[in-house]
Amino acid sequence: MNILILGGTTESRKLAGALDARGDVEVTLSLAGSTAAPRAQGVPTRVGGFGGAEGLAGFIQAENIGMLIDATHPYADRISANAELAAEKTGVSFLALRRAPWVAVPGDRWIEVATVAEAAAALGPDPVRVFLALGRKDIAPFESAPQHTYLVRSVDPIDPPLAVPNAEYVTARGPFSEADDRGLLEQHGIEVVVSKNSGGEASYGKIAAARALHLPVVMIRRPDLPEAPSVATVSEALAWCDHALTVAAMRGV
Image 1 (cartoon, rainbow, N blue to C red):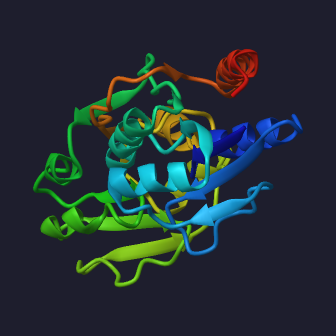
Image 2: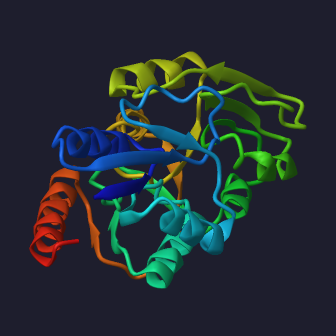
């Protein structure tokens, strides 16, 4: 069985490694290419897009893929939509691995918005020091609010930089602990955090740190994703794969 995992998340890497260790499947992990130097994945990896749903369907057929798993970031809604369409077109077994979103707990001061543009507007007219915990492709809308001072942390350098008078840049790769992020927020005098509701533990440090420092978090809600067979954890995904592979073996696929 050839398995294609659409990845870019911690869960996709763990799932790919666990499936590859079985020894009875061939796993390919696909990355979108949004990071210049992605961390080693441990399995055969391809980088770059497919050319929409039609292109992905063509790849599935050409490579004799029998199982497609969408383990992309919760905000990669276009890729997820293309994956579902390609699975429908080709008839392959399909699963979405979507980690659960974070839920506000006592002490959190969340301001929930629907888009990055709304997040920029939610900062208000008065200048504040803002930590943008967003990908480098998501920060351009904050140029509409140049009165603020921004701290941007990214895996790759921000090029070109934001067209605002006051911005600082930190290049680093997570995961980051609560202590790491609390130190960063305190060092830069941050007053507001802007984040996507990514879920998972690897990037939760900033949310916990903001709570500890009594800082508001402008939280960008997740986009609507296609309805599809889905699980929230790697262990659940492995159980689903075990069942699907058993069924395929019984059918002689």
